[in-house]
Image (cartoon, rainbow, N blue to C red; front, side):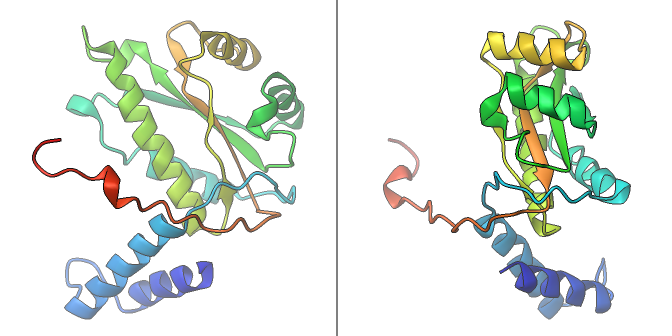
Length: 201
């Protein structure tokens, strides 16, 4: 599956797509994006291989391309590549898989100082969108990642703030270990038509 995604994306680049993209190129681009979404899986085991600074930057660029209410962009991202801190995260948050040899962990946070006055809780929507962008970008790049929850469990929030030395106005949403996958989980078909309603319940 990933080879198909990469081939489609490479073909798009080679065809010189952009604003001049023809119909065939647009179709390939659409198929590549949709396939990437439908084949993304949660990866919890990693090889321990390093990833490049350029790959990390790409993940964060994709995160910051997420939609944001009134374009407030109330997010901050902690990139953890120190093995001792990764181990500490793994100890404090066993479910985070930070002890399974990820190259890094990214901790998307809400910055309450950037939040909409009187609507501070909207940071959760914005940072969640940024988190999903990281997961999709990692998958497209042949990396593995998994969303592991922190907020709204305030004990977890406090623990993450302590480990990462976060100020009070920075609230961690989740922990995303990222790395070269050491497993290939099966893709889950989550399509459930009964979950859909048109116009009213």
